[in-house]
Amino acid sequence: MDKLAIESALGPETGSFIDEILVFDEIDSTNLESVRRIKSGRKGTRLIVAHAQTAGRGRRSRQWLSPTGGVYMSLSRGFTAEPQSMQALSLVTALSVLVAARRLGAADLQVKWPNDILSGKHKLAGVLLELRCEQDGNYLVFGIGLNLRLAPEAVAAIDRPVTDLATIVGEVLEPPTVIAAIASQLLTDIQKFEDQGFAPFQNPWNRYDRYLNQDIVIQSGGQRIIGKSLGVDQEGALILQSAAGRQLITGGEIFPSLGEIAGDADR
Ligand code: BTN
Image (cartoon, rainbow, N blue to C red; front, top):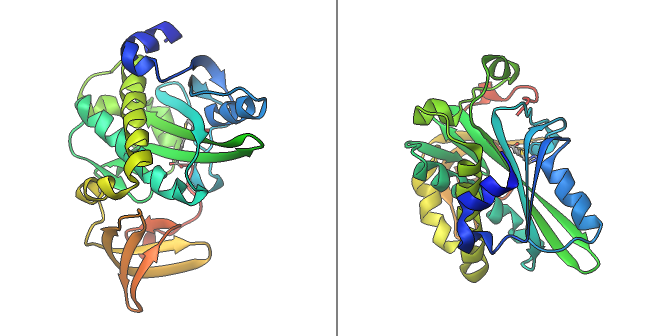
């Protein structure tokens, strides 16, 4: 995979929205590299991709195992909205990945609040947004990890059920095709979010929500709340019907049952 292949898969119109594309064989983390470049004052919209990562970062300070066979990409750009809207943008990003993967032939995908893309109970992709506040403004890094074709050893090393795009689609897609499809959908959705907020994404999210109308447990910090998921509101908060009434959840993680709350997973 090289930069030209990604540029060509993006096409001139979408390509014109990206100022710089960088491709690494191996890097610690594409999110970290994005942050380093923002800190050193390099502006614009940037796409960084890697064949493998040695220190991939997941949500909640988890490790994101990143052997070859995955897509590891970070899109970074200036961010003018309130930092509180990051949570909603994380949902938007997960939806962008789902929509792009559907276009590539992956049917029956679902989202798990706030940022997982699933096929059945198996995780296909995850999203990690990181905010960087600099003197000249705020910058946001949209980090996306998607399993393209995982080797059996990689599947065994990850201690939660995972799947890859090749298994779902029935063929191995070229990384530039997948990267361009995701980047292009994400750029469109970021623009829509900047213009209209989360509202246009509320119904699509609830349509693809794996746990809509199901009993779940939310773990947030040391707290666990049990209730029925009623989907997300216009701001992207999760509506939970619990014994205490309706609550809006803005952070934490969903578990289908108490029994699934175990130690930290690798992803
Ligand atoms: C999650 O925990 O589900 C989010 C995982 C996000 C992983 C991606 S891979 C590309 C980018 N670089 C990182 O270090 N993390 C994100």
